[in-house]
Image (cartoon, rainbow, N blue to C red; front, side):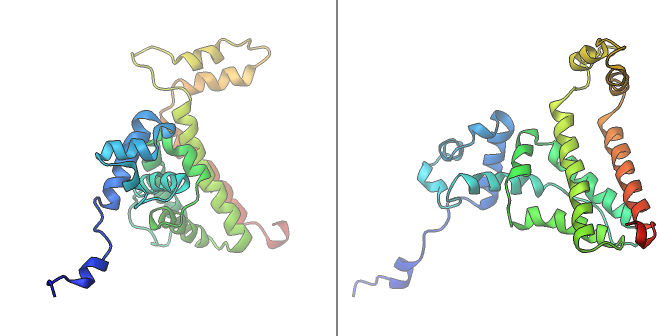
Length: 229
């Protein structure tokens, strides 16, 4: 009678923000202030809206954390794979993950503890599994190889970012390394030894060398006679 479109009245309201905008705002808070500072209220404030608006995008704290994990994992990019060299494929995927994750150190604990079935978090895992499967692994062997490689990437990123940092001035030694170097060498000779080594290694070199060790072990395992596995 009054020209009211009933179908339009029944339509849900158009989202005020895109999912990408909400993710970017949430990640910015986590990067600058830490994960503990990320709440429905702080996210709403950053977006210039009310807290109830955020519930249109995430229902609870777990989904809010997962949103940030998805944002970080979506930054993991890598080049072409599937060219017949499984070790090179693993290297390529691992480096893409490592570079993406270490850009957001505050989020690393969430990557270790929050599970998400979003494409952004599944894609790197699936790509790495495919690469490892090309080595002839399947089932339990594939699972253990995946956990080993994935754990190395995440663990090293966390250790590097939580541990010693490059000195701000040439010739300066990181305080953490200096304290270990000053330990009694007769009691802690190997700790002192690696402290001296750590003072001169770049994060990239540490990553590539560690991955070399893991891949060498995985490759050697594939070449063992069946009765030795």
